[in-house]
Length: 144
Image 1 (tube, rainbow, N blue to C red):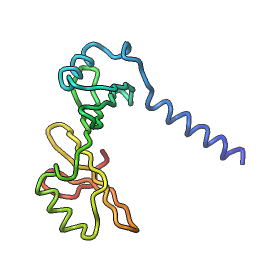
Image 2: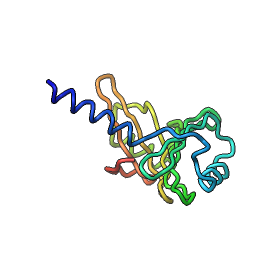
Image 3: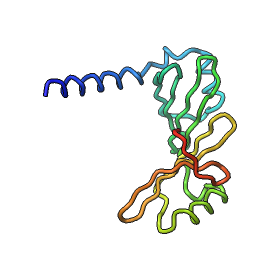
């Protein structure tokens, strides 16, 4: 029993050390300038360090966004919440063909480099699936 408690405590503290909230004053100017240029309408901005990347969680026009920026100010990844009707036709068609009987519950659009991916939560009355689809509609095994 003591081993389980020790293991649980270690896991808790290791996860806390991975992502740490940081004050805006600790975000380098090059990162802030890049962020402000890319997202001038951002509100409710919260900063964290995730590994060696600066991570901002924020809203733009009532939509959730998250961005990862390196120490040189380059945007590495951007995630934004979108509505299912905003999915590209190729993605929507792929979902209709491959997941009959499921409805779309939640969609996040990821931009990684110059590629776009869609993380989609699908549901039926008894099932739930999370899938990632590229902009051409191909289902990809990718962790975003």
